[in-house]
Image (cartoon, rainbow, N blue to C red; front, side, top):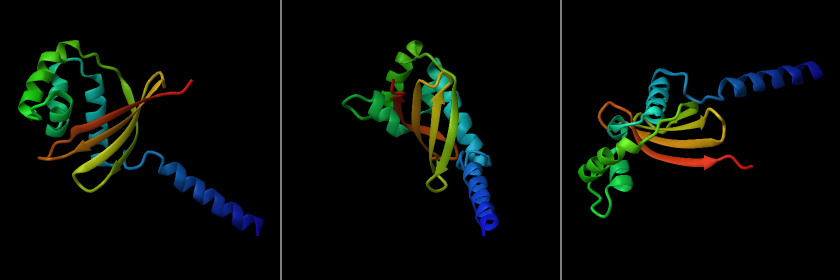
Length: 135
């Protein structure tokens, strides 16, 4: 009886450990991981082309809500961007054109929840939420 329980516990542990990265280790998961890491490391105008229309409208579009205005504002502010290497720890898909990634700063002081969409065959950043580590 104890041997059977141990086998079940070992199997459950193996499954849970294998799934810790979600779908990150798939072909599409690696693409999402690469986009998130490239966006985090960007320190200039290249970051603007990685944002979805939604992100451009809401972050840089001001009162107009126009993604073209947002893109121009993003470009004008991009000289002040500073990139930071991060580690993507988890990727999960919500269909073939929407993904969510979790990442952390290498110093483990900040954690990020990143939403992505794939409108025309290319993954784009839709949203980023930053959470500082308590303490």
